[in-house]
Structure formats: C-alpha cells, structure tokens
Image (cartoon, rainbow, N blue to C red; front, top):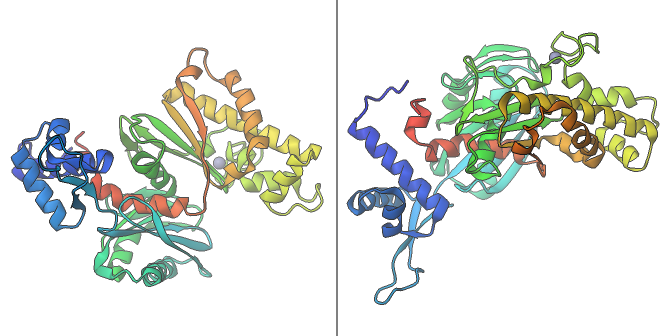
Length: 394
Ligand SMILES: [Zn+2]
C-alpha cells in the first residue's frame, strides 16, 4: 500500500508533475494549452510544474509551433540532454555498461572483464565502469541522475538486496547500498530480465501495452511480466522462472538440480552440448546456427527440438496469462529462423483454441547494448513513473 496519505499535497504535486512530464515525453513538442486539454489540469497548475521542469533541465521551450494568427505558441519538449543515466549489466565474468540520455539513447558503452567472483570485486568493477563511461563523454558526476544495475537472480528491489544468485553463488548481498556508497549517486537494482521488460515498457514495443511478457533466451531462459501496466515480481521477487518449468521429469539434469526444465532444451549450453563434438567446427552458438543455415541435418534437428520446446513454454504462458504481446529477446534470438520457424509451427499445438489469436508473438532485434540500456531504464522510470505506481498504490 501507499506510504502517502490520500490527498497529501506533496503527493498530488508529484502526481501532476509525473503526468505533465509524461505528456511532454509522449506527445512533445506540445503547448501548455494542449497539455491542459490532454490532462485535464488547469493552465495555472501546468505553468507552475513546467517552470520547475524547465528549471531542472528536463524540459525546454521552443518556438516552432504553427500560428493560428498572432504569436506563434511556445512549445515544450523533453530535453534529452538534461541529465544522464548509466545502466550496468553484471554478467558472470564481465560487466557491460551504457551511458544514456533521458530518451534512453545510448551515447557511450563499455565492457569490463571481471576476474574474481566476489561481491566486493563486482562493486569495484561496476564503479570503474561508471567512471570510464563518464570519462568517454566528458560528463560530470553531477549530471548523472542515477545508476541502474541488472543481474540474474532473485532481487529485493525495494531494499536493493540481491537475495540469491545461482550464477554468482551469492546470498543476501546489499549490492545497491554498497555501490551507492562508492558512487554517491542513487543506485537501483533489479533482475536483468525485469530491466529489459521495463525498457520495453517505457521505450520499446511495450509502450502503451498493459499486459505483456518478455521471454529471454541465451545462457538461460528468463521472463519478465507487465500486468495491468506494472511489472509483476511475485510476492518475494522470485517470479518469472519460466526456464525452470519442467517439460519432462525424466529429462536432462538442469543447473537448478531438477530434471527436464525448459532451459535444458533451449539455452545456449544445452544446444552446444548436443552439437559438440558430433558436428565438427562448432564451438559457439553462432557456429551451430551457421551449420543449420548451411543445411547440416544434425544442427537443424537440434534447433527444431529447441524450437518445439520453446513453443511448449510459450504456449503454456499464453494459456495461463493470455497477454496481448510476448516479446522474445536475448542473445539467443540471433539464431533466427532455424529456431523460430519450428517454434511458430508448433505453437498452435500447445495453445488452447481461441486464445492464440489474442496474443502477438514478436521476436526482438537484439543488440549488445540491450541489457545495459535496460538497466538504465530502471533510473529513467524513476524519473517518469507516477509516484502511485512506485508506492504500489495503483
Ligand atoms: Zn531448472
């Protein structure tokens, strides 16, 4: 529930600020009159808020409106360069970082290799990457609004604690607090798939979609959910373990300790395990997809089975959630049609008749900055999100 009492003046002001800022972001350049029409707020309220937004550099005025006779109206637009944020993805042996402006456009990126797997050395590496990114573009520390960190694992976002991460073998690490003490700027952390989901919601194909799911494939299989316009995290931050739903209890052993999880059919290591050493010249997933595209029977068979397993996972998702949209993302989408043609062909076998037409399944164009840009959107959403959503009152 909300920490604010209803009717609290500061809350109302924060809500109006968020409404105006989002109207400028989504419809800008806009005049104050148009903001009033779109939001129902009074022109006096809007003038007060826009003055504050201009003062803080988030919004600027431009005189490019078309005149209806007389003076040309002054339009307001989001000032993309009014502040900067950094997103960091903490992976098993490296960190990728991106410096973005307020529109989530990446203006610098950096990859940092990590040798040790301790929380202290991770904080060290994260702080180093921030310094490096700022230096690349000559951005001052006081222009940095915040830093977002995404990583695999169960995360208590409110307390910024990593509760459990199988990849790192860490439990109860106050990662947010540790990094914030080092950097002296606000730090937000979340599960990496949730950060991608957040980025889709604010800046990607999830804009304006109230119910959608992001499924990531690559090293594992992850999932993020937006339900009624909000990221759904489960009661304790552990939702979305689609990769560990069991397809066959007699299947291969998964790294979670169970057998036959979806991940044991679809993840990169699972695909490579079937190919090496049977197919000569394959050591990376790219090699395997090249072989499949070139017509290698065994390679094609591996992707066909993976595509069918993925269809079962996605089909069950549609049966349970019936979302408007499922976005498939992650490094694994680079395999392309050799994986997704069999998936699309098999999907109707697993979806209840009548449900499949309601859900669009989209394959994302993957780029290497996506994880870090997702982490940056953790900070951007703090700037744009309504305080009621943040407090869980909506
Ligand atoms: Zn598993």
